[in-house]
Image (cartoon, rainbow, N blue to C red; front, side, top):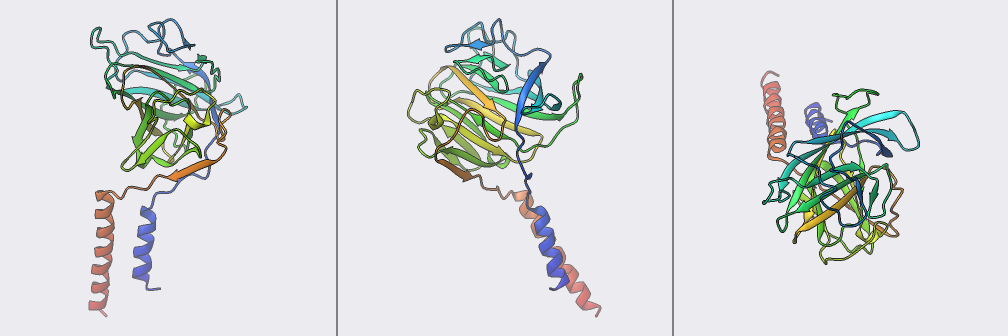
Length: 285
């Protein structure tokens, strides 16, 4: 092959994003510092003032130690940042009504290896944004070194018009049950939502979803409702495979890689650079 062509093709291959070989099977071990709640981490019903943290602000965070499933040695740390408010603030009290805890009892779901987030949505179609930041393990201390991971996020019980949406560039694929009651759209943003105001339970595959992330140290998810207000509960599992949901007929959709203008400019630069170099070589032969 012409070495110039080979060099150009090799350059293009270097620009194609790669993914990790596997998603780890991870579970929360214990919180580092305080979680965000009021007097109770338990949500046996729809949740209330006893759950929502006091004086919560955008930018507040909770951090957890994370182990590989079945192991006791710390593998990583996970920080959950309440990163944006799009309808969570109580307009009367000006409080951000948010709870972020290691699962204790979320409507009967008691898997302590998972994360629970509770919101009170005060605007129809509102949502809260949460950033999942992964760090290296540092037993007994708080780590500041980012850790790039490929994570299988499983979320359950998306009903009553609940939704989860995120930038498509941070995901490889989404998986729903073959007979799912959920709907999804994939573009620059991927949205998974309950279109029919269904009423499900924690162990119902038809209302669960899985998101396989790209290998990164940070993943951002927004959760809320397509329409309506009120409390909304979300749980996240980080094991691969999930211990709580089995899809009887899984349907996986790849999330397409977005061809950004910046990447296009870089490819054009490589191409025209190779053309110029070829002409210079020919001119001195």
